[in-house]
Image (cartoon, rainbow, N blue to C red; front, side, top):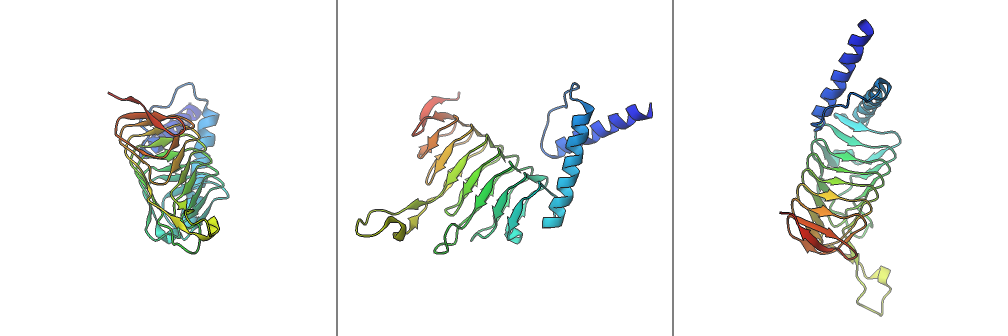
Length: 233
């Protein structure tokens, strides 16, 4: 009887942690207890690790590096997966809103070259990216609230200048406009966002798309280069 009560208590604790992390769903009754215990233990270890690294309530996976953490503003219940690297050396504050999640093996690069101090990243509340995400943020990346993304998504907020044929391209410097994603957007796996692109609110970006333009709200976009496929009514 006591064992059953402990199991119920642990499930309730885990459910509460999910709610606090912005998850509104109920745990499926078919989920094995061992899986819940394992996930709960992992979250506790990540929380301890996060506090030791940042002195804040941040969940951080193993072998993750955070550079210049004093320039990173963490919201509540932020989760950074394992084997990530966050470069906090940027001209503006890097802001990760409440319940933001960054998948394992992801990298945030704020300053790509010493000739230009990078701008950085702003990521709204309840937004999440999958594993192996690359944030090339020298030109600035702005992601709204409630944006969900698959794995292997990449952002490239900078372009090389190449108009002068008398010079090597690598010696001509760079230009940047930044990347802007609105609120409530679903991004499929392996999408590439190029400098200067903007995606409006309540939109869907199909897997594998190369996004290089400006797209209105309520759009489904896809292709190489991406174009509006359908409007969400």
